[in-house]
Image (cartoon, rainbow, N blue to C red):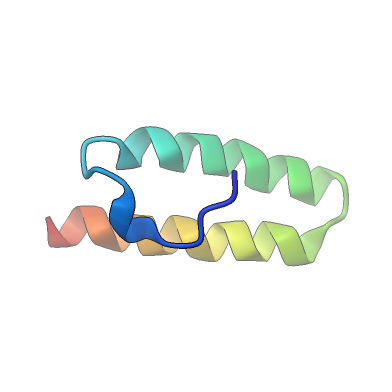
Amino acid sequence: MDIADTKHIAKTDIPNVIIELEVEMKEAADRLDFEEAIRVRELIKKLEKEIKVA
């Protein structure tokens, strides 16, 4: 999943997006693509902040 900007994601959709991103992060780590796994992890953190702010 390629998300450049998280502002367009509805707050109600964020938990589902996080679940999808966690799967993507684990798959990247399994492929030993740690840079991608870190990028996805940072995006997950950003989305989690969005939930807490709401």
